[in-house]
Length: 623
Image (cartoon, rainbow, N blue to C red; front, side):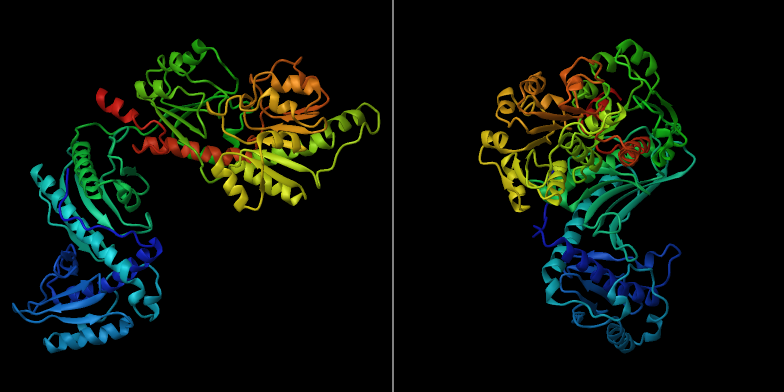
């Protein structure tokens, strides 16, 4: 669907665009003051709303009492008073360098010349405004915001044309909608239609609009809003540039960043508005009973019944929650336990969720978890209409895992478990450990946790070497750390090697027996990431061979680990913990706050962090 007349956007600095928006918003309040003073009032306040003027490249009022209009040229940041008669030359006031007090003097003089009472411009501000130095006497900006103001004007011009097309769509659906108007208090450009909701007991509203940015999104965005909040289990899928917003209001939203990234921004906006308006009308018109938003939830593998004791658990108040404390792998048992469950909460990768189980869970609609998901059959979930929400926490390392890694390094190098065992056995010291200062630690995988470990090592006076993908090694160099000359030199030269990679097919078995055989006899291999990063059986054999001489692990090929005869549990040269890297109360509360919020978003009809977006197509095809 092609939209005509779209102005190409330059993509200015977002901070400059945000400042341009605030300056123009304050300037628009002079239009609101003039409308309040010189246009007959309407009960709904519509006498103060503004319309887009293409010739003006800005917004303007309805006709004032004398037939003139006051406009705001956004691109030039100037007030423009057009004459009451055709052909009269407009009077322009450039706002750059003027304070609002000076603007008041200019506008008052012009109104007096028209024999309109200048004092009527005074009084309280028409609408509350966001904080800004203009409110305390600062002057409007000049040329420094020129490009940003032009871009802001282009956004409004594009929006006016796109919203006119949306209005035509709403009217074609048999609803009455006015032309797009700008309401000065929120500075949006929008059109809205009202009709009787499907339940027949309240008025519904669908609004298609454009915002230059606000406290929800600090960038321009288009939206299609709905009131009342739709009473359906989930909302239909949107085009790629759009997403459903559900905090404080329900709306389809397409932000500037996504629009500008589209190959054809005009077509992307047109398709977004067309689809979202159709969805909104259909959802609010549907004659459905209100949906009980209480969700039946099951939580698996909460071994110590910890989650109920955390602050984040209060988020699930009002929902039907069952917590299972044991670990079960039997599909028949799980299918029986989860038969009536709508939302399933997983604690990382403790339980495998595959097709044989999923196909026996007809009521399951959501799996909510955090981080990677190799234990979930995503294709089966998509086919069966099960949404998988998993916050990937892209910018937040697990400090709990990083701290445990460092604790294992200290425990192994200083022989802390062995010294404790000796003391408890009635003996005194046993053996002599190693200090960390001056030694070289090799970090294999320089991601979120790897970077934290590098920082710890630096604080302990260690040398750091990094082996990773080229982009990650470039980041390590930028952070001031050395990178390995080669893979062989990395394993041969480091006193400690710590693994910090995600487990994907490309990294499965990435550390081989050959790599381990290159390590020094007194060196330490640390793995708190995933056991399968190491070739099966390779670490046990390497420890027996004495290269590396020490190992510290928190992860195992089979979990829970029950093989008490394993070299990893019997050898004095291995420090092992039962996959507790992320298991702290603080980390649990952080992670499960995200997981529970994903359930609340689903209950509100706007799932978040969806890793299988094609699931909505499967859901729609069965609707």
